[in-house]
Length: 374
Ligand SMILES: Cc1ncc(COP(=O)(O)O)c(C=O)c1O
Image 1 (tube, helix red, strand yellow):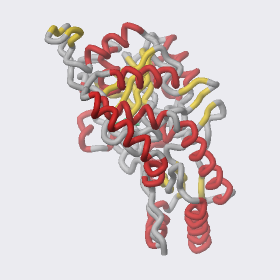
Image 2 (image 1 turned 60 degrees about the vertical axis):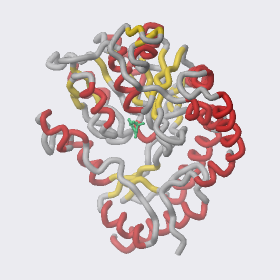
Image 3 (image 1 turned 90 degrees about the vertical axis):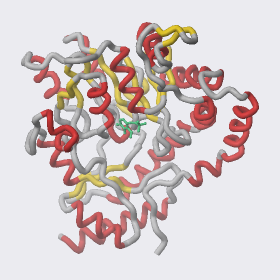
């Protein structure tokens, strides 16, 4: 039986191999590897793609969040609201600036922040957040109209964690163009990925833009003159050059992902025991992950594994239950929806070039599992 991998870059890189080699050679000829014209051009192109005035390339998605928080004035003793079902980097970035993550549970259908719960916790007055980080999980955007409205009402900064949402849409606008800042990761498996670590922050605010430029480059505007205590967190020239090639393909790859997700939806069909991903009615889900929900998830996962089908869980342990965040004092039962999801969600193989016959085999196996177990 042919194995079905969860993700593969093989076909993607084969299809643009020549272009990648050319840009690599171009970068090598220029002999400029840090803060050069490839990065400047990519920042312009990515900002234009997202519909924002500016973009600042940084060294990872985690750094994008960390520096965006700093540029928004978040620091020691502040509270920042986010969700417990994200990659831990969302919370880590808050810890890096000396602030405290305050979690709000997710909505059971979208898996994104529950906006009623969000407003409730701020309205009560016990929490006075300096910022909110909504996460556009799996490529499906959080309810940004509502979140921006709450941000304005309570004078709270909004920093989008768009690390899984390159090109995702909401009411005709793209992820990263709603908040004070939008943060993206270019980790290789992302919808737009480089060949190593990388990230970017988008913004319309010229002050945040200038701060980010200082923060990522040791706090210097002019070489050896340091305005603030900054970091070494830059996106390098070769990665920027590669990302310029890949950006041109992003919409095409996202369309392919949507097609593949549609095929999954059709083949999984209306099985009572399986919940398919829901799409924000205003948005364009770009399926960074295709995530189903099923009660006996671990048995299904094992069954698929026996049939050489790889799956993943995003994420098996919510952030509030991670050892690293024991100090926050949350416990089992603190966030019921998140915890239930963590025990039921399963990410199925999905990438732009996944063959349709792989999807068919995954779905046949799911059907046979359901028949055997019900
Ligand atoms: C939601 C989310 N936030 C933040 C990050 C961190 O990005 P990076 O791995 O580039 O630091 C990721 C990446 O996995 C992510 O999925």
